[in-house]
Image (cartoon, rainbow, N blue to C red; front, side, top):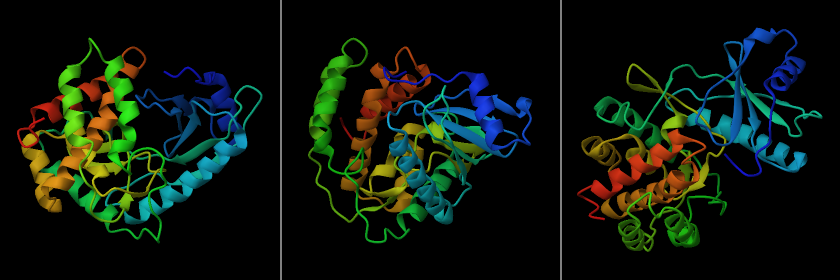
Length: 299
């Protein structure tokens, strides 16, 4: 998926996991098919997962990132309304795989898709309750780090322009260019709140159509209050998006900023993963379609 992606032979993954957990049988370390874009994923027995970063150069820097993620995971789990992974250990590099890697607890359930619960009022309420709980968490005086999504929309102009150029022939670029022009300058009101920062379907666990867990919580931190609203456009149809908005009492400006963050995330998915990760590419298309057809946005 990435030009600088590391390779990981399955036998090496098994060897590394068993080196950390000698009591685990070789047959209990199994590769997990995933649309994820950051890690190779292996299930360890029934209770854990091992995540091997796809990218990274300096082992000490990667270790520092993993330690920070583990701290954020604990913080998220303490305020989440549903189960989320907890850190277990950090594994050591080897000659065949040069980076530290992470072990965390496994959360049972079914991975969501853009359409799997799009119609569900119950799921919409579950999602809104989760976002509300995260927002109420103490930032402990922290503010947005400046990396990734969650700061100022206009800071992403260069990336959006690049994505639009790459999307010629794949998407209605002229309309999407006009849409970003109307979204990028939306003013920001309100202090940062604690945010998951990546509430896409692949990080959402379902059971019987209800929210049952959240994955990839290592980025939990302060950000624009509108950021986690991306989940509404990634996973819900119009009427259920309104359920989320009503539950959270979101005004028009913040709601539109949530739409802007969903656009910023989706516009890069379609072209970048067109061949290497069709699931992520399809998510981008689905989200952009929801944005462009939402009568309240008039994009």
